[in-house]
Each structure stands twice: as C-alpha cells, then as structure tokens.
Amino acid sequence: VQLQASGGGLVQSGWSLRLSCQVSGSFHSITKMGWYRQAPGKERELVATLTNVGEQNYAASVKDRFTITRDSDKNTMNLHMNFVKPEDTGVYYCNAVGSLHGKGWSPGRTFTSWGQGTLVTVSS
Image (tube, rainbow, N blue to C red; front, side, top):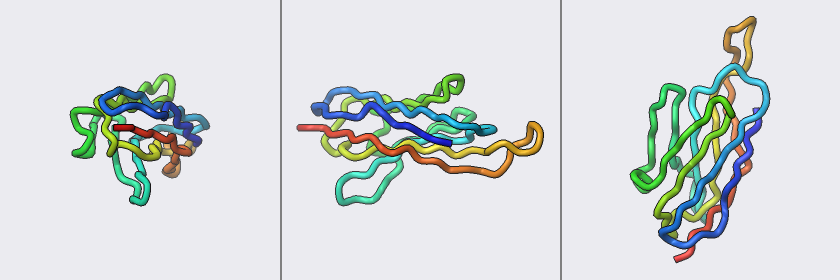
C-alpha cells in the first residue's frame, strides 16, 4: 500500500492550504488515516486522525483551524488548514492503517503505511 502526499508549499500566516494524500495499491480496508508533522529539530507529532467510522482526533494546537476529511471512493484524504501560523511549519506525512486481503473476502494481516512527506512553510 503506497501513500502519496501533496499540496505543501510556502504560505503567509493566516492563509489557507490543503494537503492531499492519495492511497494506491491493493488492500482489504483502511481503519484509520491521519496526518503527522515534523518541525525542524523536533520529533514527529500527530496533527489529526480520522477513523473509518468518522471519529476525528486533533492536536490541541490545530483544533478549530484544521479539518481532516476522507473520500473513500477515491482513496484520498485531505487536510484543510486554515489560519495557518508559523509554528505550523514542518514536513507533513500522511499515514494509513488497515488490513490487507485475507482468504476470500476476509481481512488479512494489518499494515501501516506512510507517505513521503510534503513541506509546509508558513512565513510571518
């Protein structure tokens, strides 16, 4: 299962940006997708996650500014970033957790996949 993140770039503080993540490959189902980011000199941290039953979870620093959405038919996930701040700068990675194909129609073993990351730079 491969993930391709896109949409990063240089934006000014207060602007909006949308990141996209395209999932490809063969799999039975995805149970959770999410966005993580890594700022320079810091560890990777959770930004937002979305489960297959619609449960959303956001980091306190982005809640009420960012929205995570998923289009299951197109196997894509988006992160809508509004009112961005310089502290939102970092490399954003998309992540998917799910199951590969098992026997017949049953799910098989689980997988966790990461995209390659897309850089977001917010200038003040």
